[in-house]
Length: 194
Image 1 (tube, rainbow, N blue to C red):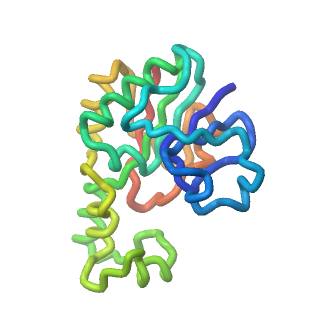
Image 2: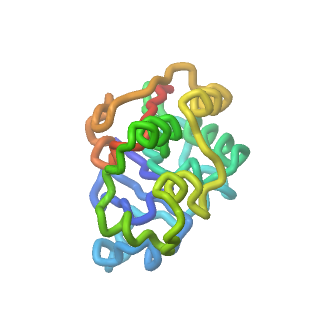
Image 3: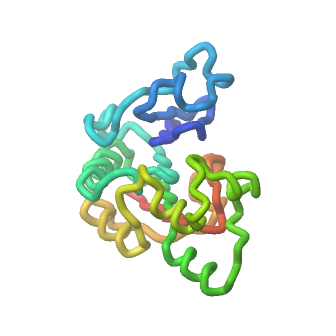
């Protein structure tokens, strides 16, 4: 089995069957203690610019958590098409993005528990005292788009997927894929099947 964790940042899994992919040098992802020997399951690839580095129909599952919003719509479509090509028939593409719908629901209800550590909420990096957590999470300086369920479904359809649905936190057809799930309160999870 081969599972890809694309746009992984510091959210890596060091053992097989995982391959972690990000554009950052391993020294910059904040998890050097895991990769002090430059573990071979980390690939430094800029998926927004380079071709997908896997053969057609060679991968069982791909996870992209809190990554697609860092790409513009054209980069995201190119990436989705690359994922579709590398997945084996029946392979799963699991996506998690900040969900504007959930931010709206939580804000209107007056809920201030975003499921993030209090220290992080009180001290976002970089600190911006006048910025709400919704503004910080949805309009983070590195985010290039807001993705809704409908927008993701359009992106998946254009990328070649015909079977996709919203799924729950920690629920997947490939159980290992939920190991990376985070930010349950405000994340939209979608899975597509090739």
